[in-house]
Image (spheres, rainbow, N blue to C red):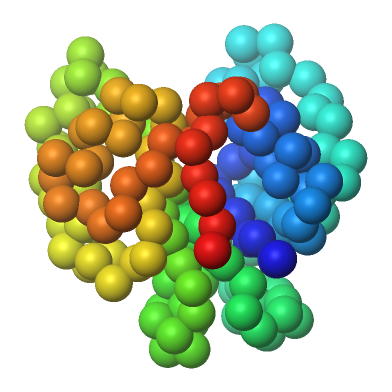
Length: 167
């Protein structure tokens, strides 16, 4: 199976799960930027991405990259803040590709939280035809299930936390 992730930035929090998926699948990971300045300042360094096809892609190059991927691939988008995810979304809808959503739970302590709740309701309406929602952890699963996202599963920060089954 071919699994493609479209995100804003590489995350060392997800890399072990993606590497585990790559043991039995072909995994691609496309991001807007390699590592953010904020994360560099927090001490994040180089991340072992062995087994994963990884590339920083500009939104302008997304269509070209998408056309090179095998038909039948599963695509997972992290649309909040990810320019590549927003750029590939119309292509997925147009070609009726298998796609799902990948979300972290919003920070409830943030002053932006109320605004982000509106954004997530909008995304739920926009993405209602997605086949799967991968939410970070059980709290994320409960949060997105309550907001009407389709077929929500826990996608963990570690391999043990993931409950995703691809069919």
